[in-house]
Length: 320
Image (cartoon, rainbow, N blue to C red):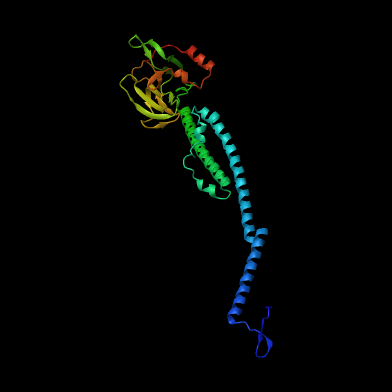
């Protein structure tokens, strides 16, 4: 309740209550309003300094949850980094070693994330250091995964080529042991059966009956299947890739055509005595980078004892 004000009336010689002017009344009301608002704001400010507002509490709760998630992701990244480290070591020491591939240096496996700082802006953000560290670790993990994936691609390719090579190398006899009569001439220098002069025999001669099946000794593509005029008669040449070729000469019949893909063990012809030959046999050659080598060195389908027996029973009779 406001203070009453009085003034002395000289005419009535009495104190009379003085009425406030309109301006005074408005001023008093305004002052009270301003004081009330100021007091309310002050109380709210004091409360906010002592107690968190619901919005502040939500923000703090969200920040704590975010930091917990960042810490959890850091643990997951660290675990993944350890796991890929095991794979990287196994890749270098085992897989790449088996296929004689160069190891991948650590500088390559852990590189690729340098240059411009992609997360420099996070330095000015609250808790930005932790987030920046997490993002950088994720980038490096992504790079290491990419490098390892490319390494596995290379190892898979090498394994495929190795498997192809193992199937392509001429590693078996061209004539079945059951159908082989004997070996008449081995690889090396010998007497020419027609001229009687010494010359190099570039293959091995397998003696058998006419039309004895002749088998491809490795996977490959037929590049020659014709009657030649250089003494080989009906001959087949198979390109096995990887620098290997095989020649099958003096056939009675050719059962494949040029450009045909053949598999190891596939029948490609029949034994005969065509061309420069004095008896039914197969002249078989193995060429490495177009140079003849001893075919016996590639017969993986016989053990040492069988190999020695074959040499002991070989009758050095020259047929071509």
